[in-house]
Amino acid sequence: MREGMKHWAALGLGGNIGDARASMAQAIARLDTHAHCAIVAVSRLYRTPPWGKTDQAWFFNACAAVATNLSPEQLLEVCLSIERDMKRERLERWGPRTIDIDILLFDDAVRSDARLEIPHPRMTSRGFVLMPLADFAPHHVVGGRSVNEWLADTDTTGIEIADGDRGWWRNTGARNAKGTA
Image (cartoon, rainbow, N blue to C red; front, side, top):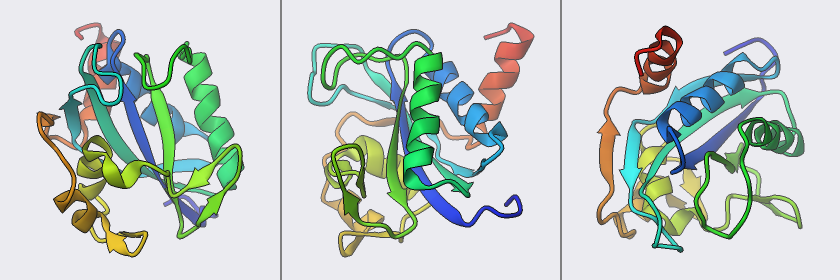
């Protein structure tokens, strides 16, 4: 971990427009090179059926853990800035997207305001969040239960591992830089 990084946050990433895998890899790489963030863990890459609005393409989903010296609000701004730079448009709730970055957890914070709710309010009912989060934080307690306990009670039908290599985000970026992806 870089010196001065005193907070830990878990992020959920997803997308289903364009090359979602490459978009998520780019977003994680941008977070890792940000002066106030360092990626400390990344889940495997998952292919998941759409949730909420089901008449759309399947998603790619992953989670990442980041060490940071930013506040939750500042980290949210970094994530939203990355989404904007990557042309994320918010046209409809649970609709198609190029990239989505959600703050799931921030240390052991519990907070809710108009802009940010931590832990993420719907994370414990979403298999596409819990499966990747369990890759690196299976025993982290959320709402009195571990991620693994929530996962055991969650529907994971159709969710499949798209890439079991936790370095997929680095590999995707390298392939894209070489023009072979």
